[in-house]
Image (cartoon, rainbow, N blue to C red; front, side):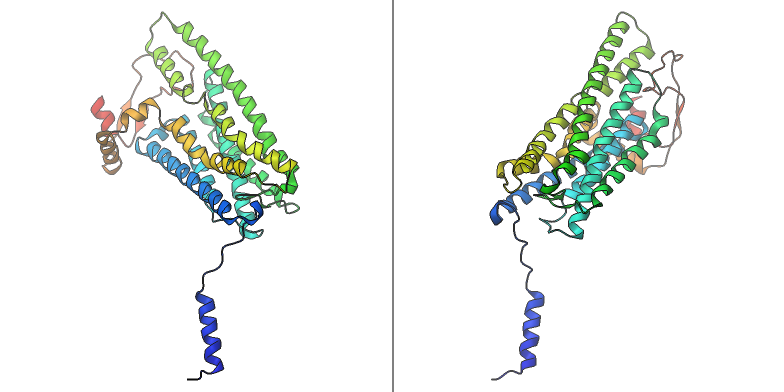
Length: 349
């Protein structure tokens, strides 16, 4: 039975509209689609795990009301920046040059810088607390302006002259603009990491001297400050070194790109995809799994903490048991009014 030309055209249009779009060709490894799929799979898997780590951090800080501590609020802001960075890494597959590719490159530059600057703010905050014994919560707005404003400016710069585009396993600054890569990220990154290593060394030396000076005497305020300083610095000392370790393989990969831009080394791309999106997971391990948090991560404590958020707020006032002699800003010993009392804290007291 014959069909009319219109029917043939209609059927062709219908089948074309419902046929799946072909995958974008692999721009790396001479078009080896399997290797590209492996790289994308690694990137998405690591970014997903890192995103879960960020959500864990944010959830713990909210659940146990750690945000009442200024240092913990800084860690909260860091976790939010790392969470958004992971979302940028999760954006789709390998994008061709275009609006979506530029958008991913912009987000990665913005949030990578934001994560780094929040780490720098935490380091600077500890320096003021421990070395200069200065109150620091008044700088919270300054930290926000620095950690969100500076990345915004730096992320916009590559739009000048169209310096964003496909850069391997994701979109960033292409191989032909190596000077932009090192000027806008890798150069400042390793300068700041080196500075943080020096600062943490000074903090550790200062802290050890303070602890030795406090030995042999007992004062409730001194003991409280001593324990607080130890708990603040202990999980943070290793972070610059961990951050440095996570940055080594991306740096080696980008140096190889600069030397041989037409050759992609599969092993280096794999290591780059494994380490770059890992900041959120590292944050959860370094900042979130401290002794106090691990002790409280029990079904009973979690249940009580959730109930404290759901129940009617209770007014509780806490006052220092002795006059304050220390100038340590990390301990806010002024009367605290807690509009949302934690039943666990009440039970323990």
